[in-house]
Image 1 (cartoon, rainbow, N blue to C red):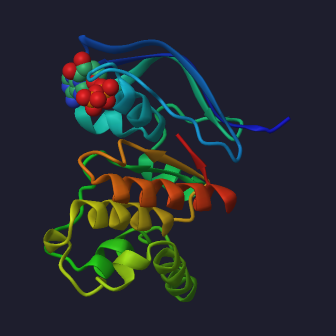
Image 2: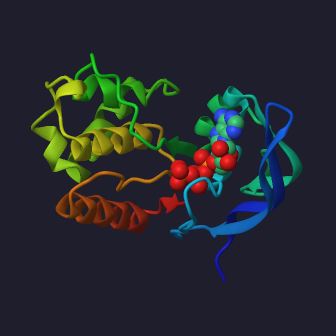
Length: 198
Ligand code: ATP
């Protein structure tokens, strides 16, 4: 049986001290697995991911009940910087690329936690190996590339921190079917390399 990488146990999330966005959410991501969250608009998928990455904190949200364990440690309320260092990274819905930076500069921002610049360069090549489509656009400003390419940039940026778990929020939103297929096949390849997904 595989080991549990992320365990969300009966959590509640409240925004602004009063808005109850999540109640009683429990899920398990086993090491090496891809777990999908399905639900209607506003049902709390993004909030669940942001509770795990602790980005809810930036929106005046908090996990008020339950627990979140990553690799056996309680991580609810941990600093997102340290979570990224520990291998948990979120790719936000809507990509959020820096439009005035080039594709490559955007990807390199994902290595901000790294101290080994030589290895970061090798990892950049790994990103381009997965996302050939953005290798040829590396000098373009991210604001001038397509939505699908921006999604690849956002995922490539996340890969630069060498994550064990990627919290991937609506990666196919607004993309053409061919690109959706391409992105999911890259997810599958990354999963084969040992990256887990929620
Ligand atoms: P979508 O599919 O539209 O992205 P979702 O399933 O990801 O939706 P969330 O965005 O997590 O759902 O929203 C869950 C609930 O929390 C909704 O009722 C939403 O209005 C509320 N909510 C989300 N973000 C905030 C916030 N920053 N402040 C207050 N309420 C919020």
